[in-house]
Every structure is written in C-alpha cells, then in structure tokens.
Length: 67
Image 1 (cartoon, one colour):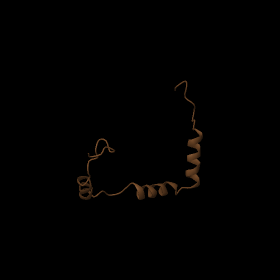
Image 2 (cartoon, rainbow, N blue to C red):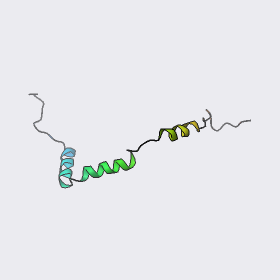
Image 3 (tube, rainbow, N blue to C red):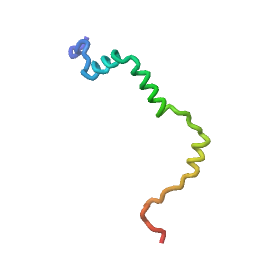
C-alpha cells in the first residue's frame, strides 16, 4: 500500500455527481438522448464530397483588390 494514498477519498465533485445520479437515475439516458440529437448523425459521403468540391479557395489576403 502506498504511503501517500488517502483511503477511499472522493472529491466534492465526484460526490456531487454520484449523489445526482442516485437522485435522478434517468439522467444518463437523457444525456445520451441529447448527444444523439446533436452529434450522432449519419454522414452522407456523396453529399459531403459535392459540398467540398463546390468550395472556392479563399485568397491569401482577402482585402486586396484585383486591380
């Protein structure tokens, strides 16, 4: 056993999260549902390729005139 180990130490933040999960067991399912709304999406590779092909390269100095 390590000399510096604190036996069964939990930070205030960890205690808060554990207590919150005990009070609201549906919380993790709600988080996963929210993530699926914003992040877990299927990417249509053909549409993405068309979008990338249609992009116009930006000039190195945007504010320079053509004259």
